[in-house]
Image (cartoon, rainbow, N blue to C red; front, side, top):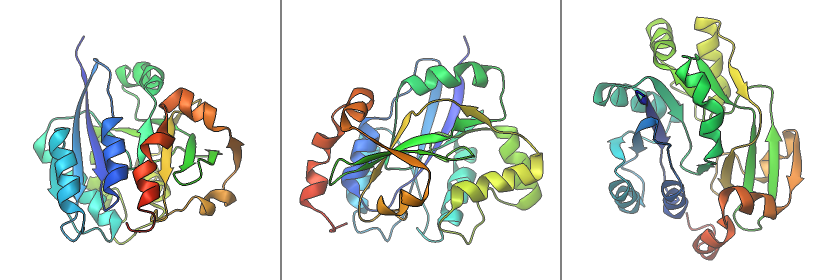
Length: 244
């Protein structure tokens, strides 16, 4: 069976311990050929640590100013498109962990050439307290979202970008709105919760800021069963709280 080729776009800034956890937990099944493009920023005081993580895990590196984040994401798409042939673009944060079961859920959709697919539920994990929320929205989250290449190209041809270049927050909603404006597609939603978002004090959207989104509190045992003992991996983050 021919492999599905995915360009994985990861913006990275500071938080080297979080990025290390992300990299160690990023896995793909045998039917996927993934090229991970990490978009780093030279003004990052932890740049050398994040470069080492990229090198260890064979991530491709490119550089862009961290702000505005929309321009940084667009640079990653443009640069990655030149570097490798791909069929789908996957967005994922450098603080996200995807459960391996997600790939079983999206496999048939990708093999059938779906235009856009993702999940409308995620877990948010407070790295300091182990508190966890399950969040659900009416659209698909940016993390784990898969978009067919010709949809990306149609949107760029029409607008000149996927992410509004001057924006630094609300980019999941913004980019999806831009794509739908051009293509009129209806995103396919995967039922279930397969992504864990690791929250620290330096997130643009903090853990406390998520309380306005429909959610339910989740026992840590559910996270441990799906993603392993993340709490143990966050020990160094707790020791260095607010440093990053």
